[in-house]
Length: 67
Image 1 (cartoon, helix red, strand yellow):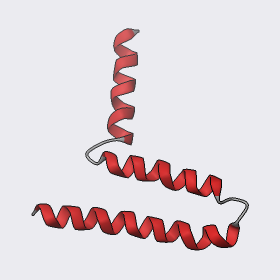
Image 2: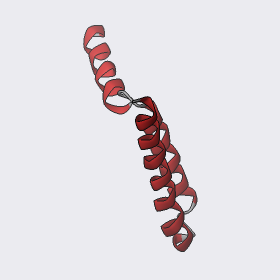
Image 3: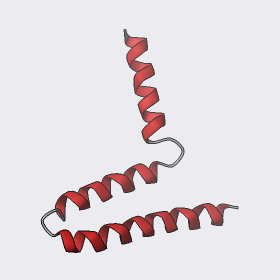
C-alpha cells in the first residue's frame, strides 16, 4: 500500500510540477486571480489574459536566454 501511494504521489508531482514548477505556480496565481476577480467580470476579462500572456512570454524568454 505504501509503495502504491508513493507511486501515485510521484505521478502527480511529475504531472503537476514536471520540468517547470513556475508554470504550476503561475497556474495557481491565475486561478486565484480568477476567483478574486469573479465579481468584476469586465476587469477579469482584461486582466487574466494579460497575466497569461506575461507568464507565457516570460517563460519563452527564459528558455531562449538559456540557449
